[in-house]
Length: 125
Image (tube, rainbow, N blue to C red):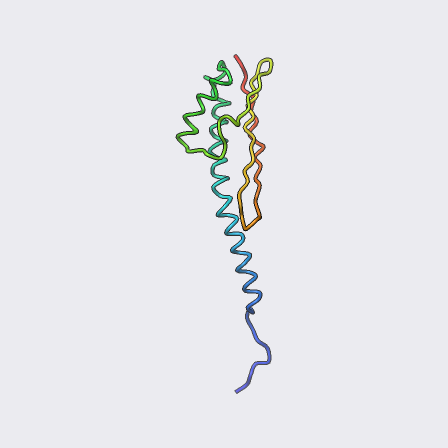
């Protein structure tokens, strides 16, 4: 019977590193996925409000009121309607719904996610 002179396989330390990295990635996915799913919903609501031809003659407060039902129906809690800023220019209303979310990951480590793609112009008729 011959003994092998080298061991084959993975040791305990590399296995622990791989498991800890996988757990960290899983935790980040678990904490950040709901934020991105909420963002998809918020973007669709805001985009519909900006591109709806029926809302072209509305004021900023009327547009905000019309979006309220969609926010309630879709249970959007990441951003409030009062956080959406409306600015009136000459012939457009600028709707600024950009926001950021802070989520705790580990003990005292937070993730900050900024969504800057929610700036729309609504033409007035």
